[in-house]
Image 1 (cartoon, rainbow, N blue to C red):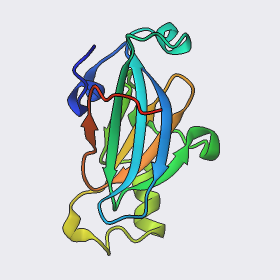
Image 2 (cartoon, helix red, strand yellow; image 1 turned 135 degrees about the vertical axis):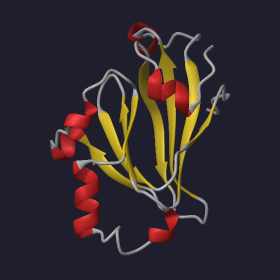
Image 3 (cartoon, rainbow, N blue to C red; image 1 turned 180 degrees about the vertical axis):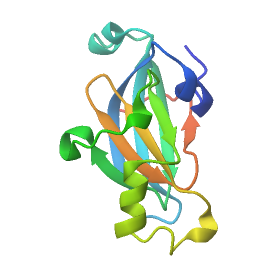
Image 4 (cartoon, rainbow, N blue to C red; image 1 turned 90 degrees about the horizontal axis):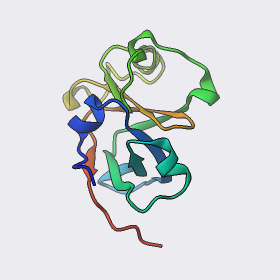
Length: 143
């Protein structure tokens, strides 16, 4: 098992993710919970190898799920790298949020808005967030 944290996911190459479940919450603390399997070989994900990593990536309540690449088809040059998680301060989605969601006018005390792109072996997920997500490693999966 790997020691999974955000730094690992932002810098590791040859590591594949598979989304297990996602929940968008309306409570006071966290808006988006993403549960992932991870492995250094995609075949471990496909065959449900028990040596896969399992972890939670949790975004705070001001985070916004922007969808998947299949839904919007927007390509961003800042994503040209091999990492499973990419964090961008400048992005097409940030420009969209600034123009249509008024992010430069509201919640300015929260800091800079970043785009997080989460790449699984099947698709990409896009999330705008003012803070880095928490990554909780080596979770036991509840059935």
